[in-house]
Length: 379
Image (cartoon, rainbow, N blue to C red; front, side, top):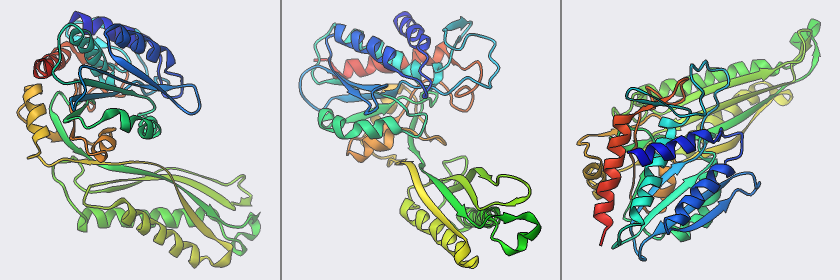
């Protein structure tokens, strides 16, 4: 595991918070993979400040794909007792931003690349590194058109998000929305004569709570999730300029996270129907527009799918799970690649928290999974 820890030390040292560039990390990974004999392609973001990577080694063929993201969540507003961008080893823990989510897995994959370079493979090992996963899987969506022809048809894909090394067969899809509520400006002394945009917003929030209640009581259910139904959530609401002015505009950000059984288009239509109904109640002077700003697909793999048994054998974990958070797995699954999520660490216990850490036991278990994968790919 020393190689994995050495690489993790380098990865943690790159401040790849999603709002910043990841190019220094990409250059390091690219040089490492090239030195290991991989065929490497950089996939720049259209804006130029970030990039993803695709790399493979071995003969042409299906092979196995490992996928990880390079960005991490911010540390601002969190109280850390250690430098978040320096790997700190204490007892059975490795501290640093991204150790669990998900540079621990990326370090294990890059260490595997070094071992793969020393043997003859019967089929290829493939690696994808993405960016901007933490802000809604934006990077992989931008990479996908260029990436898909390179991938071929791997017989398995492992997305290494933290699952305590259990094989995760599902997570919900997500759609993020912006709603603009429009009213009429006027003096607050004459407030009843004008349409208050915040009143529309309040009515819309109430309607969305009604949609959530219906999903909880009459919608699809999957007890494998902590929250077994699809969810609707309002995250921000802003409106008004001064107390003595009737607000003519309010803006809210909302999302829904949906089970595979609840179609995203159906939920979107329901939300827009509620927006139209509320706006119509205020006449021509009021209205609500809803626009989609981001989305990523969910994952729902049949437990009987061969990829589940295959990765369970690699991981050494007999149980499967489903995770509450989103991943990039749905993008690969949508390409027809059998995909599951499996990686070291715990999102619930460690991810996105101050003093984020991954245990050395979990890293060792991930390295052991990589060794079994290499044995399976060798000639």
